[in-house]
Image (cartoon, rainbow, N blue to C red; front, side, top):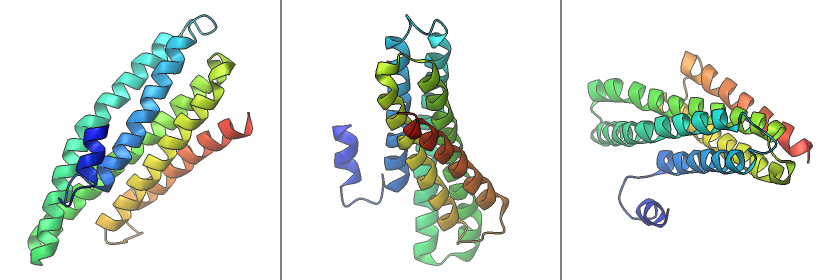
Length: 178
């Protein structure tokens, strides 16, 4: 984490917002895993949540590399005003950002499910996991909009908004249950 923070705070172009949002989502997955492991006495099926969190975490880091590369390519194209290259790179950057939002929304819903099944001494951890996932989904959706140059008519924009709503609902539900 310290290395990521140092890299994000550097003067280099990457890593940037997508990597920061990925880290928030990864922390969400880690919290779900921790709580599931600590809740096995009251939640015999906790292993399923651990496996789901691991699968989502794996998808996150694969997507993080793609997101960083597509951001770098799009930024290069924008800086040089290379219109064909802009048209080629921005859709991929939007797609990689959308995938971040998808994974984060899935994590928020996993945190909600875990929050209902885990040892309730860890309910706050699941609420924080959902909030972190919601933040990552919001960041992904914002990056989709930026990469589509705010074209709200694109299906990726509407999907991103729906993903944020899913993540927000999960976080709000857990927060209201304290």
